[in-house]
Image (cartoon, rainbow, N blue to C red):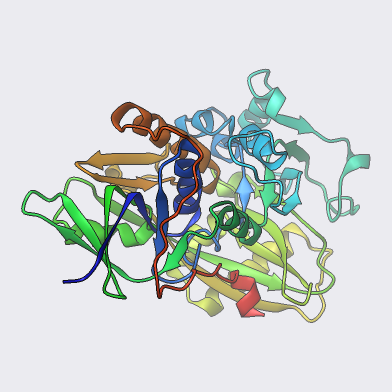
Length: 397
């Protein structure tokens, strides 16, 4: 019979959710480790744009929404962590930009303009005078307006690496199989090296992988939905750094394009394009999506002609808790069933909120160790440490 090791908590899934929770459990003193089938952050986390936003992009209809209200405090929460004063020490994380902008092509509803200038949102948005416009908006051909948001952008690769290091690399690469009894309770996790791992709590933080793990335990009360994206990447040495949402009458209540700037391994700038472009682009082929993106950027920045431009696309399959009519979830999600806890943060920026809620549940329902913050002494022989996934632009160019 295979050897069985014991620990307090097993986290399955090495994206931002799993890594953040692993560290949060360690702070509480729980002996815990993480199991990842492939690479850390390899699906959704590494492919995100790294935006830590306060929900302004959800107010483009000219009014607050449940999503914009729940997310409003997140930039401050993350800034505290990035300065070392928050619940997670993220001082080693690379911040790509402390500034984020919202710009119009010149056509926008008066309702939204009035809303962005209202007292209810004034502390989160500031209108910039034209002499303070950054590139490329300082060009005389730009006729729209520009607002500065409280949002920021981080390097997701450095975030994953920082969280892995904080957890003392208790992040193992292995395929897993949940072994459940007839009451749908998890008895143990079987690892690919033949070992079995028994815990008091099993946390599913595997994104899209949660669906198969739930099916293995015949748990139908927790359901998942997928909302795909088709992102676009533009690589050119003369691209300026841009971190902004483009809005217009044509994009209705969501950004027309969301732009973040990253670097290839050789240091060449890459624009990573999301927003409505990525959502509607799911129906387009790679070539059609690139053609559409070229026309959009030509419309927004007609004075820009990047030299030796290279283009590529990247598809993302966002996994979330199932919603009525497949709508976007407004809040992070976690639910327990016996000794299993399933979670989806729904957005990168909401991970601290989700972790705080889960840890509050643990302190109510589980006996805490006598010495919080204790070391994790459990080792898994013959299992490699999971590596951080390369970003899409690092493999595309």
